[in-house]
Length: 306
Image (cartoon, rainbow, N blue to C red; front, side):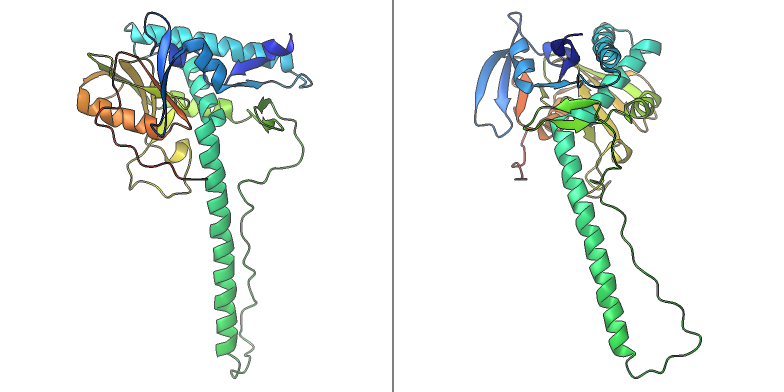
């Protein structure tokens, strides 16, 4: 395989194409609402960048072919879902779950959030250690005049877990993400993550009119605002994975959905709620059908600086 064949788009084309008009154009709007422009689907995919399988990877050709095949099968599965073949079964479900898992591992927003979470966990560990040391010093001060007894328990060391950002030595990356220098990532957890997604309850929500948007992070995690802590980032703490498939359909992969795997017809209020979730997860760009206005009535919080 050539180096070009070992590259894949960071955002699969089929997750943007359903938002284009008959000329193949999308409306692209910055997350901070400062700029809008029309862009062709292929140009948007190219602008969002590509990841690559390193040419010196032991299984580079096989991995490159597998990633391309999974994406093609997921695209066909999404088309069948929009056409009424729901819930997806077998190969359709597996290929879609693998693509969603890949997006959760490689998406820009998810990587940034994981980095912030790792930093916060590290700060919490340091704070815990410092607090324990201070408490120990205070206790020693209080016990200065107290004679030692034979029954005193031995001192216990307080140790923090290693930072989530640390890695075990030496395994070559499976893929390289754009950057200077490129950032290596492992796909080792991708099959397990896909199995977790496939095992959840899948629902399809649909709208009478083109009402939805997508973004440069088309696979987003959602949980009630009171459900988790700031450092809980990932599938385990998410109640739902939300994926707009086109301007009228979105896939919801839920941890718990009593109604089961059904198709739900929803209205403008639910569309605004879904659009807010997707827009908040955008790293930089949001995309929608040029004839629609999916951000009407959607208030977005200001972006926080890194």
